[in-house]
Length: 462
Image (cartoon, rainbow, N blue to C red):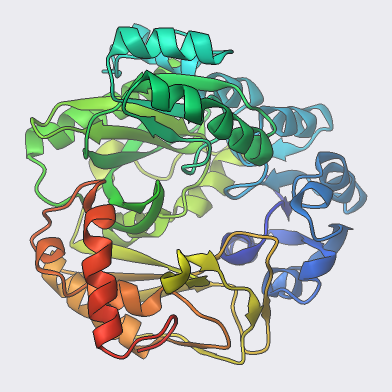
């Protein structure tokens, strides 16, 4: 049984994991950079250790310092959260080698599923639909061009390691591919320490649907239904909802079965997400597996009533899942809006600064996950997401109405945010009908910003 867990992350996900550990009677040790010495996650944990300077490479990406902190504090487990080292097989292996339970899949599974080429081969062998694309890593722009020609343009250049929209570029022809290859590779190297690239066929404006899976060491694998994550800007998700609107029950069942099949083929344990794209004819294709907890996991928890972090801690303690597939019942509808510290009229540039005042909504069916408090600082060194607001209703419309109210109640002063833009989106007729795909935000953004401006909005307020 886990007794003391080091949380190798920061922000709202670190706060969530720390709280869950404490609720389960497990001591939680936080790590923090010098920039985060007053951060909420460092304050609420049972103990906290400074692991380096403000730059991620010196702290939250410093494997040796994190391992040393876990050992010095006599931790028996490490939870990586999402981002940073969460999908780094080397870090998972270091944990294993030092007798620390990595709260996630094994290092070998992370390695296989984190590499787009090896994951693709495994999925094809398991009978999971995959997109046409390169059969392996494209080391050079010449190899990428050859693979793209075979798959057919347009194509997507993707980082072989990592995810979250980083190291991704769409290319309409060979000239554009050659121009973007080094740019995408450099971004991947900067974000993940791995600049290798992969090429696959680009389906124009599909829906991005993902299936939450969870598996224990006893061979039990279940899925918790799907989420629609199609509302994205530059491959960065803005709004997620569960269940996906407008899917047929037949398609839901096929995708759920494919996700479980994918997890079994990988020998997966802990929580993970199998991501698919769905075209206009309801054909679906595997694109990747996120071997970690997702930012948007709360919408799944809200509709199925299963605490995913708690199940991760059970699995890491050697216990079986507390439920089976037949126990998973999807009730109602949930929506999540990501609130980011950004200047929306300045190409969404990050907006660091000090929070002078913050007030979050509450009430039935409203959930907030954030590490903000009045007086805290938003650092320029880390991701710009500062909060997630989640609402649940018996119907999708009820969830939307609660989100309107929740966003209207939210006050974040001292920085600019995308909060009013999210509020306006909740009134858009196309969104309300559930008629959107991954191309929606790029097409709709000028109209939404125009409405925002006419309402008297200037960056973070209306």
